[in-house]
Length: 378
Image (cartoon, rainbow, N blue to C red):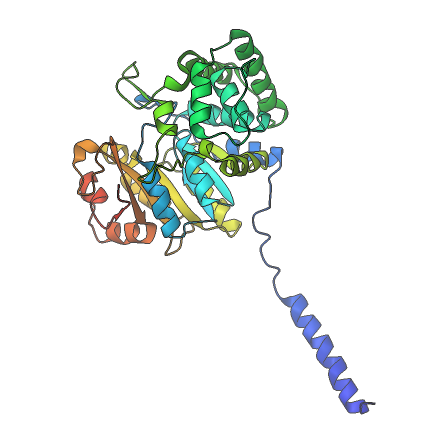
């Protein structure tokens, strides 16, 4: 059907107007890329980090055994995607594996923790499966004995590496390959201090194997071993550690290879690290899904830096669903105390935390952890 000339002119100018309006609209923010370059990864670590500080314990592994109920509650609350922020060593990998964030930052006051996570990152890069991961971490090479199958249970993995002896030649070659990976693939120069820290971590895992534990006061004390932590099961007998699942391990490995798990040297109450992470997430349109605190707030109260931490939290991009994951030492006799565990695990909505702080509800640490918390059960 032939249209009248007036109609054609109307459509023509209407199209021009629509195009002009579309071109005038501001372009949407690019958002977070699917992967970061090694250059960008190294830049973020360097530019976001603060000077390192000291801590009273040698946190080479977690000492929190009650993480499985947390995983169930996170699933129930649909905590997934977005950004993850955490502190400490390997327990972060289990939370990351279950939350499946787009990006993760591990912030720790100890410079050793950054090198520890770079070591973990290198091991993930070099290890296509869980068996190779444990072999490299523990300096116990896969020998003549039949290695665990790709889909081996976590119990089979633990049994195998309990029997497998450490190997000095494998340790030396492994350490050299890890350093090379950090320097060439991650583009991070390893200083003399960095090398000493890598050796300290690797030596500790080599000497104690799966029996390595959280160290306080110069010894292993009575804290749970790495084997104890990995072997934890829920009430139905199901494992939840990241090494218990082929899928979880592969997800973490891919995140590491995409440079999306980033260690940063910093203090929760500092002026730079956490604030810079918040700026980066906001710039890339990513909201914090979960922030794992461990029991760091206990020390923030002791150091009188808790208010500075709250200011940093307020600057993070969060929403009504954003969560804290925190642990409380059993000596505080918490109402939700988890029997049989040294720490009680709790969740709290971050906006609730901010509101309670503004209302003056947190006069001390116990009031903080016992106010408007979400119990995760046993």
